[in-house]
Length: 212
Image (cartoon, rainbow, N blue to C red; front, side):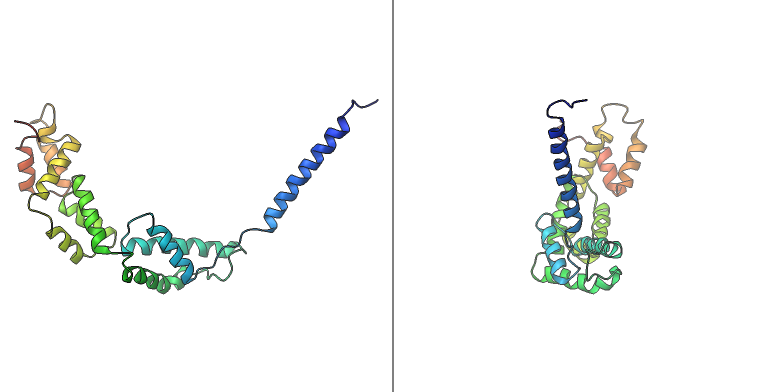
């Protein structure tokens, strides 16, 4: 039976396209990109890349670099493209500390400046001093630096933060109705947020901003 005109041409063209596609995939496999080993230069580049995008404390940067090292070390176990990298992440701890120290000395990382920015941001969101200290500690900010930064806050910052917290959560004077019914519950929420009993009573007995 005679084939329709063009059938063999279409099959030949399809074969060529398929063959080129397979060849391209083979070349990609053969030329798998080389992954740089963990060196001082690699960590410095990673640190600069992160700091260009985010504010960070010394401890935050250290954790970021450690995660990168751990990922690269895991790859070294299963991927031949990772050459010259030890599979034990702990062998790079000293190198990470040196890179973080270099970032501090060049003022790319400043824990006190970072803490000041964090405190201002948290205060605007209604965070208590106790909550702020806890959040700073998680980010590796020392208690001494936290104390210095918090002492720079004016006396009314804690009560203002408490009112902000109450407004955001619609507690106490910001409830539209049934305030007395929920009074103890609202006081408990303010307490769990880290505000003192004195501050809590001032909020509960106060008036929302802008009210007569």
